[in-house]
Image (cartoon, rainbow, N blue to C red; front, top):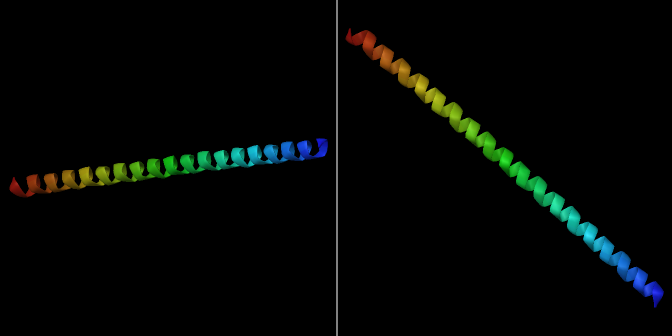
Length: 67
């Protein structure tokens, strides 16, 4: 009986360890997703900056040709 109890306890401990490992993986995946979102936001900001630069360029060209 004691042997079975120890075996059950070891199995519970292995299950807890598997659960901790799954939780670590979920946290890592969450962090990877956050990093992907930050990168998408940086790319959107770069795109907005390019649009602002293009707008300024067109604006200056129009001023040049209209004066």
